[in-house]
Amino acid sequence: MAIPSYSADQLLAAFKRTLYRGRAWPRGTDTVMHVTLSGFMPAPARFIAAARNLVPDVFPSTTTSVLPEWEASLGLPDPCAGESPTIEERRAQVVARLTDSGGASIPYYVQFAKTLGYNITITEFAAARAGALRAGQPCCGTAWAYAWQVNALQTTVTRFAAGQSYAGDALANWGNAVLECEIRARVQAHTIVMFAYG
Image (tube, rainbow, N blue to C red; front, top):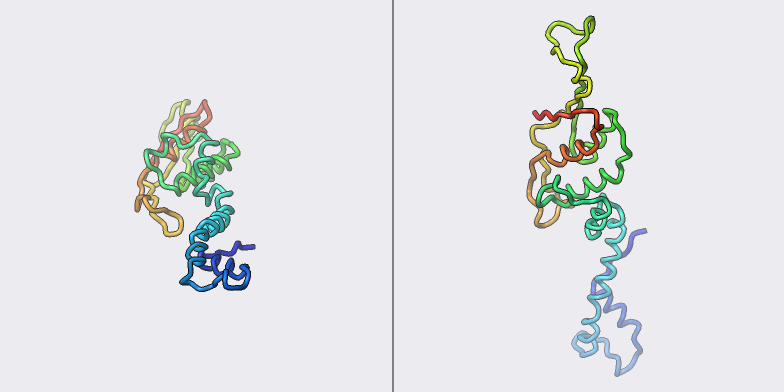
């Protein structure tokens, strides 16, 4: 059920209908009563607007006013996001951390990156073995069995989006710092991750 929206003028008209009838209770717009009551109406209009915004603020993917509380509960903001991340980038990082169930598989890392707003692929490496190595393939040592590579766009661009971005947000942000930082924080200790762009 949607919460209705009422302006201060609509609230004033409704309130005036509840007043007693008679000379002491004039209903005209040019009266002291009208001017006095109109001074009280912006407050309930603000309360109604706040109630309408309460439902989107409950969910981290749409929150605005309680985003700092979501971030504080997850140890954010952190240096990964830079000095002035957009609301959209901050929300994505909150959602990614909240929905992170842990894992070490390729689908896990691909999905985690997608929640952050990045499209990636992953390349695995293996040590060269006689009988399995073909001409033209790299001759990797045994340490390569623990290495893997995240492949992403040269530079991920986050653009300003009407209805999602806010005044003061940049028209576009470039960079993959959040991707690298968040993936490195989830890498298994015995593995080595590399990042390739382009």
